Length: 198
Image 1 (cartoon, rainbow, N blue to C red):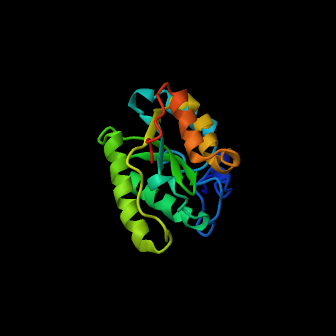
Image 2: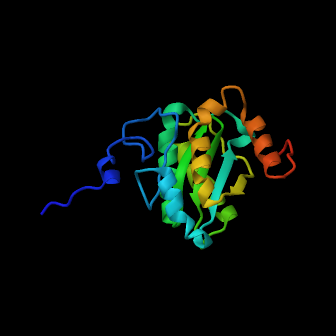
């Protein structure tokens, strides 16, 4: 007897909050990948995760290119995002959304307890930097900045931060990377330094 598909399963082919299909390079809202739920309502996902909050370490990460140079072209971003997703999966971390513009990357990630935040970002930068230099897709790329921004997020705020990362192109129509980072630092009670993420 054929199993009846649930409502969430029946919408799996819709590219709304799910993984970007192959051949859709040029999207402006990045990738959203949740190992627990590839497709479906983000609010439901956040509610389902809330009872496991003691096992979660959800982080909003931001890291930038060296000197915040605009060297990540639109058509190459999906390739970069997919590589980062693969690196995160290898380290048992869950990616909820990744996006950015030409000079920096945002990620919403549940960091596995087996790896520190600093180690995770260091390994992502190292692997992607080597690949980007050899790929021929990022002709002016000469490395990532030294530091990174991170902020812990509550599972119930997952919807909000995912939407923020999804809409990076909109945010940056009137605001550069430096201005955004300065706001993020001040929002989290940290002092902004011009040398940060440069």
